[in-house]
Image (cartoon, rainbow, N blue to C red; front, side, top):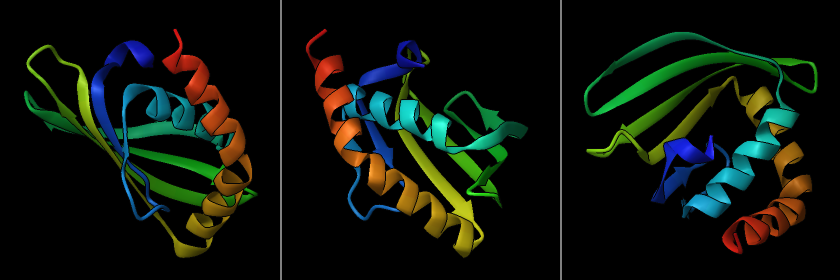
Amino acid sequence: MQACLADDVVFRSPVAHKPYPGKAITSAILAHVIEVFEDFRYVRELGDESGHALVFEAKVGGLELTGCDFLVLDADGLITDFMVMVRPLKAAQALAEAMAARFPSIVELAASYGAE
């Protein structure tokens, strides 16, 4: 996934108020969220030359979740903006709790990516 991200990518979380700028933190978040999601699968793609919307389904803590990754691409096809939306609320709350518990590890992983 890292190879698809621009260095200045901005990650917009469905459960955090502020965006996360940079390839290292975005990569670390994505590495952890794929471990939190169960039965993750993309089910639909919409897009054009400037970006894509990828609809996905997964489970978090046994709760079914539907979400969408909105990706904006640069001229080289790298992701510059990665915004995620999820529903329903109960599953989004479960995702927020699971990711909050992992946040210290996410920050540590991001630091290791930044050192590469």
